[in-house]
Image (cartoon, rainbow, N blue to C red; front, side):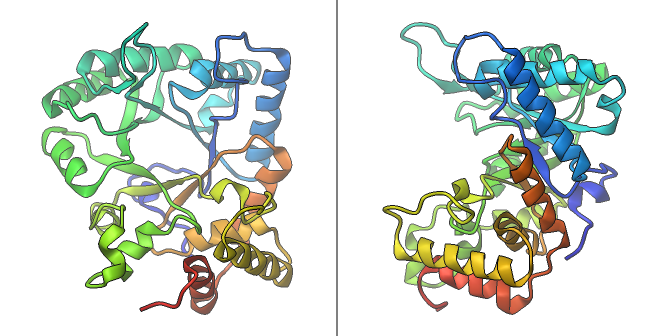
Length: 325
């Protein structure tokens, strides 16, 4: 398994795994942050750093802003820690529309600039390393995005930019206007959500008619040296210990195979699931969304696992629940 990923080729020395910070800060409400929330974040960060994870993924909406605020309190406790981290956050989803106003996506210049100011304030930092646009805005004006990115670059508030949940065509449109290269695209990818692989396997196959992964996106990101990041890489824990009650036989069989493979390789089930993603030559970065220190350590073991071509396809075929065409 290559340890070189697209971010490295751009001079961004990110860790192979990213710790997703969505669980931090308590519930998605306006209740205040407690000392227990700060302790939870502190223990997660310590476990991650001990495991060699130096990249952290946020979004301005996570627990209504409290995830970033809690993380910021941990940074404040540990002078010098900021300089050891790659901090990434996302903006563009709006819940704060007021009574009777719809939830929406917003890539307007004013919203992007205001969002970054809020992110920096909550984290208690002067800049973030990467800003991702969270979900595609149907009313996007790429000129406005470009203006916002230029302003953020000039002010030193953001060093790099990327996107999340976007297809190749949407990325091309934005990149045509933005001077700064878009360095990452974060998408849902895991051993139970294999559309990113199926899209290519099902070319000229009837099975591909209901595919939802945007055609050519995987290949486009590889050609453009864009970092593919996988959110929900552990498939909600279904392959590493979560209850399988009511799940289809393919999920149960895949979970059994993962457990057997982990035992054979003397590693954790989480490591096998993540190693399957990391075996892909695109250099996928899993974003692990847990605050459990032991689970973080279980995930970190993925870096020492080598899956053969046979093992990779064995897992993929089990997940499909049917042979390849």
